[in-house]
Picture (cartoon, rainbow, N blue to C red):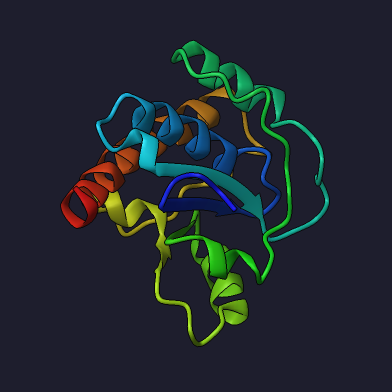
Length: 159
């Protein structure tokens, strides 16, 4: 069992680009917040292709440019059991949200939504995998904005 009583899981497709970026950003923000010791953060993918692998080198580099180290993170696949452990399960896009909704047990009492809702945005975090470095920087900026909103929500609900 995890130490914190507020648990956040970020989910994308392969858990090597978007969700580890969000994981790293939010974890770093949370550590600097008064509630930080109560928050546990993880990330996962709906697919299993990259299980055990580090984040994409371009995601690592984009995070490093902003002073965030995500290199130690390793990809894992989301499990049905995650719904028993996490209060916030945040999808990077609509397709992954649908996958999560399909596996979500009826008794799940947490928050399951797209991550960018915490930045008051209705779009998906775009998958930068097949693009260039600028896509990874854009993902970083989106995740940073949504992380600030998520931290505010947690402060309001648990502060």
